[in-house]
Amino acid sequence: MTLPDFIPFDPNELLLGYQKRWIADKSPLKIAEKSRRTGLTWAEAADDALIASLAKKDGGSDVFYIGSNKEMAREFIDAVAMWARAFNYAAGEIQEEVLEDEDKAILTYVIYFASGFKVKALSSNPKNLRGMQGVVVIDEAAFHEYLAEVLKAALALTMWGAKVRLISTHNGADNLFNELILDSRAGKKRYSVHTITLDDACAEGLYQRICQVSKQVWTADKEAEWKENLLNDTATKEDAEEEYYCVPKNGSGLWLSRALIERQMSENTPVIRYQAKDGFSLEPEPARYKEMNDWCEKVLTPVLQRLSPDLLHFFGEDFARSGDMTSFVVLAQQQNLTKQVQFIVELGNMPYKQQEQIVLFILKRLPRFAGGAFDGRGNGGYLAESAQDAFGSLIESVQLSEKWYREHTAPFKAALEDGELEGIPKDADILADLRSFQVVKGVPRIPDKRVKSTDGKNKRHGDTAIALLLAHYASRQLVQLPVKAHSRRPRASRKMTEGYN
Image 1: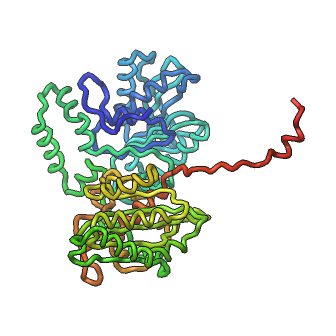
Image 2: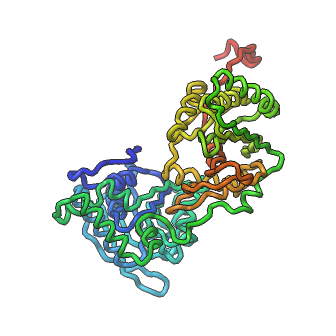
Image 3: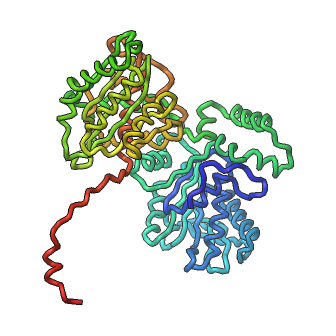
């Protein structure tokens, strides 16, 4: 079941929106990067009480909780018991058991259900998971000293249908927990990732719930003051961002290295630039149309004719009217599934109608055109709509947002690192565009800062970097191309078997 991305606070509901989405996600592997004290482990306890209460035929199983200390274990088992009582699940009292952990006897907690299943807290020794079967919950995963070994043991359980949940705030950019999240967003791992910042939690009612429980009257001003105090009380800004905004420390700065970009560049890929003269927009539209049509036929047609008719082609666009550059990127998917840049067009000071004219000229001539992604923000929506009118669902108008960048920049970087995106023009301005990506609050994006082009004539704002990102995004979307049916003679095998039942 998929729930909405935003669920408003309801004082009569026990769970907040982000807690409901976490429980509703039945992925075998899932990760939550979260702000402190958002109640996600409490919500996990609700789900685990239900799982342990069910019969095996209904999906019931044991649940094993691995926290970073004994107090966390007791708190979690208490929460499971509370949920069991709240929903009238048949369960016994919390029991204490002695767990033999190498040379030590460790006191742990367990609650048994009438179904025959249990929820049990374990130590972080990976050996404790041997021979077990069920759901494994690793709480504050980023702070486990031996997370790799614990995870290795937990993942072995999935061979027989077990599930693994990792829940944690961040503990540095180089932590395995953060690496798993980055690899998952890049498509290298199959974890479902949930991000819950302090702002996300408050938007769906975290502070309203705090006021409800503590019998205070909620106001927006009180909530703002509460959040401000939390942030001010941390030692540094970096600590506040890590604790409350899911930004691992040491994770800021330039996102793409020069060496990484240059490794995927080719001096054989053309960059075609056209800077419209001052006053061009004041000329009659038919005259502008003729001038640009002549240019398209002379300059673009030879490049388009060199494209392979056998390969799928994709398109990415970043829009600008004046000041910055409009950029068009054409990718082709090779036989080995590598995406290769075919050419890039950059337009400066170009009127809307002529941008539309040029983009349609290109799209109509792309062999096996399989999808395009356009910058749909602001005036860019005009060009996106024009392309959608001509090509329908093959065109997506993208609203670039922090959430969109968070989800789609990781696969882009992974493609560069793995050599799956190549043929970027060997060009100083395009290199500078890609180098302008910065990690802001844990999310790679182009900052609101303009620089001059290498010839000093134009301003740039990472324009072609965005177009490349959008083209790669378009190439990752599964588009159902029309299939042309052809009649043929009946198979010989049909004649051979006629008359037989």
